[in-house]
Image (cartoon, rainbow, N blue to C red; front, side):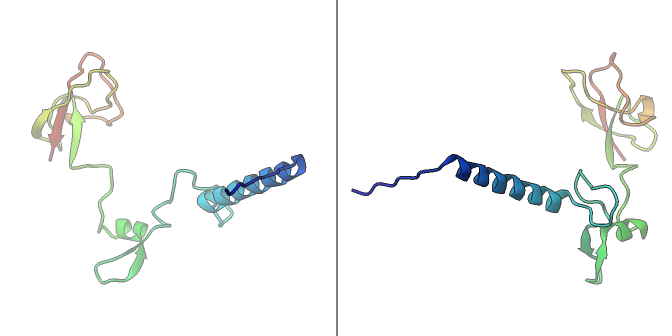
Length: 129
């Protein structure tokens, strides 16, 4: 029969705890660190930090593709939720039932920003270009 006995003393537990805290701290610095001296990018990477291959196979930043017009911005998506379809998004694709009345969507004829909310309407339309 095999038996295993581990005897951890109080000073050993303090050392182990310090090592664990140190490793977690190093992991957070590596994961969220911004080594340029500016504020850390807490919500992930910016488009200047993501490297991608362009159509010729060259390694470029994602931001350079956006700036050159290869990738569209997010200001005008292909589809959006609206009170009624219209404007840029004229093609009605169906209705979204918002039971909790928490959805954010555009106004009549898809006007305004998608962060608006109309309490009187809980069935915004799904509209596409």
